[in-house]
Image (cartoon, rainbow, N blue to C red; front, side, top):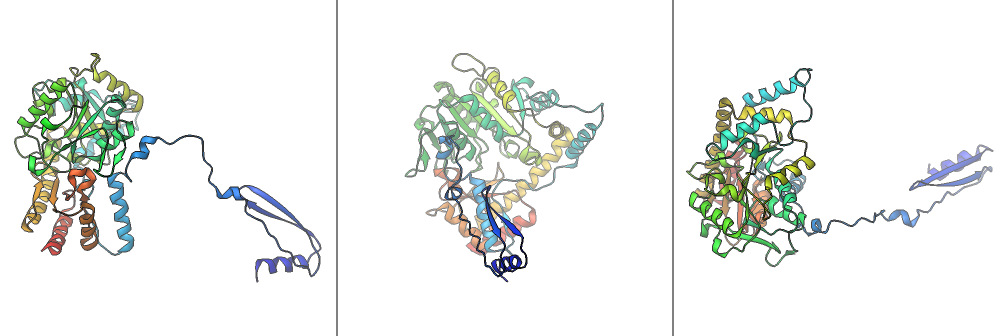
Length: 461
């Protein structure tokens, strides 16, 4: 029986009046129905036209965000992975794309975090807000572990929730009116944060670059270090070593050239050393190993890839007192002001873990985890070498940079995903000089690394 038939039957059996309510977009239409025997009633309500149009505020969108191309690289990869799983729901997908750690955090570190969290449930052990710059003990441990004899003091170090977050905080310090240089290819957060801050022009599709950013080309032909003689002067220079995505590590001579270049031009280097502990060769692990760097450089780093803290979130940034703006004002004071405004400090539980990381037992445990990932890297490098590819990186970083000459990076990404169910990262996502390359991450379970390499061999044999 239809709704109208049911309504007619019900009404015909009663002499009472009925009130039918029809609600559309919070607007109620009342229809009075006086019952009559053997009568048929039709209830019709039209949807108001205005209800089909979404309400809009009068607030304009940030035009800088509108400049960004599609989504951030790694969420876009995740979206394509999800679409692939919808297409192949039974596929055993292996992710060697985003650089997310897989090995458990060592017990010596988690036990310290567990102890700290339990102390928070006692009157004696409870603590609330801490110093935004980080706990003194952890700042001192970072200084003594990573910057011994480099002239970096405890209060030059700002503990944070990760290097990526500090990159954006530094951008707030610099503001919209600075010019920016980045390695090409490089970690996307440098460029994207510059765009969001309003430091760039529009994206030019013909060259795949944003206007007003100096892209310092880093390729196999120049040893993945830019020809500084052809680089225009900028206020800020983002530089990552060992590099994400290429895995290349700058030599002492190269970093000496970079520091001199910055001094000659009055620029500030933002040096990302998040993979320094993966270094196998005798390359500098900190920019502050280079004489004069304290006057022109900031260094940012992280526990993410050392201790498996990608979810715990803990890092640090070094801003030396010697680093001054053009008016003589210390950069560190402005950074501290931004930190105090935008951040309440890293979790005290995470900081307890960080302190444990830097104990003798914690350092040993971190080196063992790093050693595991470096073994994964060796397996991947050997696989692609055996297939005749030109392979870069791997020695000093957990990333392998594979060349597919004459091919689109996204096409290679799609082919590998479609035919092997393995997720990689297209090189062009890191900048125009990454076109024709694919980054393969060594972060993964050993069984997955071996299986992925088996599939690579079946695809490219």
